[in-house]
Image (cartoon, rainbow, N blue to C red; front, top):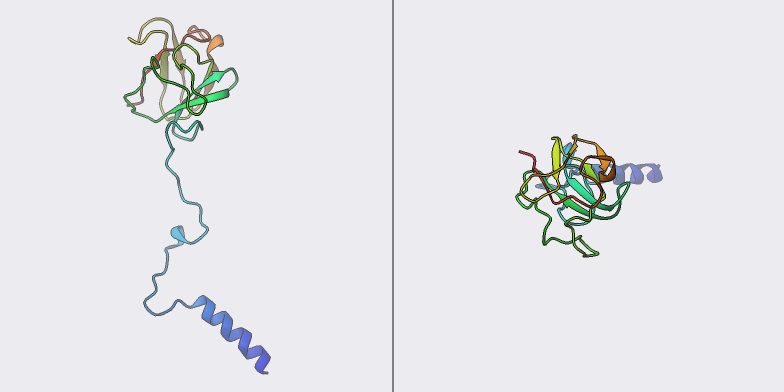
Length: 141
């Protein structure tokens, strides 16, 4: 009979918090997935970001932007991790934001334009903008 009581007592001790111990809310329980904020310019296209890719079909180095960022001109900027000029070298784009984004041929928001719908991706060569001509984009409001 003692063998049955000891395991039962241990099970009760493991499920009852110690006096004064904080108990986590269900959404904060250990091991529960927690939402993470996107890390900008880390070379990974995460949810909520607008991302340029050096190569077609969302491949090669990635430059990731958050919504409402002011730094939307590519001149003088480089690809994260691998380096190299960003201006006039992007070949594809993935818009993982909740708004439409326009990519422009010139840094003054002029020239040919590629309109990228929220949640979609495109190869610039398949748009009026053309491959390796992107210079700026509109930030989401």
